[in-house]
Image (cartoon, rainbow, N blue to C red):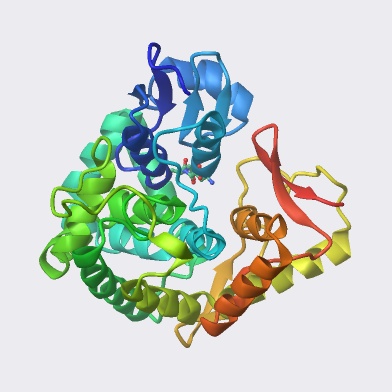
Length: 377
Ligand SMILES: N[C@@H](CCC(=O)N[C@@H](CS)C(=O)NCC(=O)O)C(=O)O
């Protein structure tokens, strides 16, 4: 079990998408922590030289171990044993939870960034206050401009904005029904799916004035789930007697099916196109095992691809990191008995999600020394 005496140090800020994932996890598990903003001198002096770039969240354990990446921070604690493990035992739930985590942490980046920066004028005071509190007034402007500049590579433009907004509203409507029946996505405790989804749904969509107001007025049960995710322990007074387990027998709640359909409708063909681009890149460049995915640690994109989102053509940047997230679903499958694997492959195909697993491609993406690298076997 993680130390209960000395708090973990979590470098992050309240309005950061990925910090929220780690923070929610620490609170759910009752792991004592202190959150430290990036303006603290320790971040520049001790943390950045190790992780080689300016990125949050970063966990520094009482033993001095440094972990960057929201999902790696979760896995760090999962390995030690926690109160409420985020990984369902049921193979289908587990694989679908990873796909939903991918949707939250990757596919919803345009939603989060669009609502924050396209409506900047309507929420400038709030954003400026948050960025200044996190990084200091002097740096706030620079960081806000940098974040704002990410919109084109995320595929946010006049053509896609109506679809991004329709997608957010559809998601809210679906989840509002689900969270009337269940406290979390797969039952009585948060899974890796809830942690993935809470990234955009807390920091940007649940908290910034414009999208936060839409969430509260259109989907109050979703707003309550956001509150529940950020509360200590399990915060489920609306569900007396529900229990704290995942839904039994690897069953998928009926109310979750529309979410899975939306994910299948939205992540393809973009995901397939991005994977095909990376296949070509590997073929052409033949990187060695352990070679960083990009020339500089802070560069996340390796190219861009012409694809579409909900039927609208769009150019989207490609982060190899997406393979790092989805490979966890492949890994869960690979260690399961053959019969279980067949059942899950069928269930994914029925839901139009077979293509969400990268599978064996002759390469993968790993993280070594805090940097994403190509893995060749
Ligand atoms: N894969 C990383 C992504 C972390 C990330 O993108 N963090 C953002 C803040 S929410 C950041 O530090 N961005 C710095 C930048 O893009 O310059 C994780 O899960 O921790």
